[in-house]
Image (cartoon, rainbow over all chains, first blue to last red):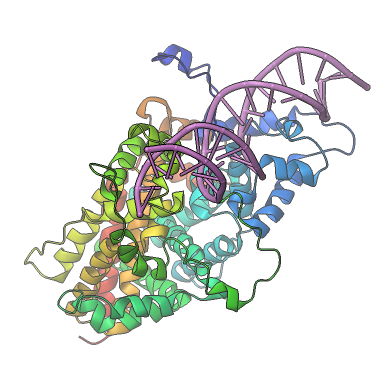
Length: 257
Length: 257
DNA sequence: ACCTGAACACCGTTCAAGT
DNA sequence: ACCTGAACACCGTTCAAGT
């Protein structure tokens, strides 16, 4: 979204590269972020990053990502849009901050019923938060992968799989796959929810589409198409979660533990 | 991205709603799409939707989603941007078309070695295509879920799980979970790939970030953090795929087949 | 019928000038 | 030191007028 960069005429070598600010959402950017924010001294009773994020979440909740413009945000505080650039360097930075902020809502309580119940609880909790949050999770996820709140979740998941008995490298891979599955599912489900007019899930439209499919092809869809269109998203997730946990159990047995 | 809609003053009832064109990417929109395109009669030697998609893919490959402007596309054909609106009604429509077009590259060959090998092949093939395609898959996936090429893939997956012995509803849920997992993983991997400068995967930056974590918390990350940062994305996917297939096998046994 | 110049109503970001 | 008016360089989309 940066529209008029200095065009960087040609092939600026790696020397120049070091002088460029790290990209929003990168590990480097998150490392520096707290220090950057701390040295800001806003005028009395004024803007803080926390208040800006709160207002941005309201705008997102009303109008989605495209409604979140720097100008709309400035209007909320009755200030000029230029003023906000004292708190973030670009709209992308703002989105990274919001993305991580929201993941702070994920509770990491232990169930006391073993790793499988704990992983199940963590996955469900992540899903709950992602679905309830107004930022399209694809945008949020990429930008906040290294944020402090996301690291908290990674640490918790990693801990559970280590506790279950997986070696370091398998625990790491399993953690990443788990996050990919939960976040990927929630991503699709939240975008599908707002599809049709008036909360229609689109399943009626899909059924009509199925009827017009050529009879000779799409045989599986003709056989089980209705099950496909009418499956409630929460049931699909519960089923996917069971598959994942069964799979981990199976891997655990193979590792010889 | 529609900037100046008629604002739809207030609460247009469901009566009006029927007169609105279906949203790009919805089942209704895909149902009508072919008919809409067929009745177009472009001037000699002129633009076709296929050629526009091809040019759009080139622009995407060079500059990503933000470089794909209607104006840049028009320049490619030495025409005015207004002319392109004869082929699609909005930028969103164009993105839906590209998203589905790209999934046409997924090959659906059978391995002849049973459902498990076939599912594995299908998942790997989907991953290959998503990673090789220049549209950020989150945008593409939402818009093309009901496109003809995506339906082909759904039909294939559904067929394999039915063949494996799952009942209709379980096959449907398993299919959806599989797609969510594969697409979600590929989504993250492709965005992470372009993160650092010069193809740096960002793992060095992450390692530095880990070093600064408070010693008392983040214990799992301190123990297995390096395994987490250095896990090659393809290994992670292979591992997740194995977990998923083991899980399905386990469900199959439970269903009593 | 198809095409387009010109306009409309927006964007994110910068910066010189103000307090 | 912080803040901002005004500008810059873009957007997607529409539509009257041309061919």
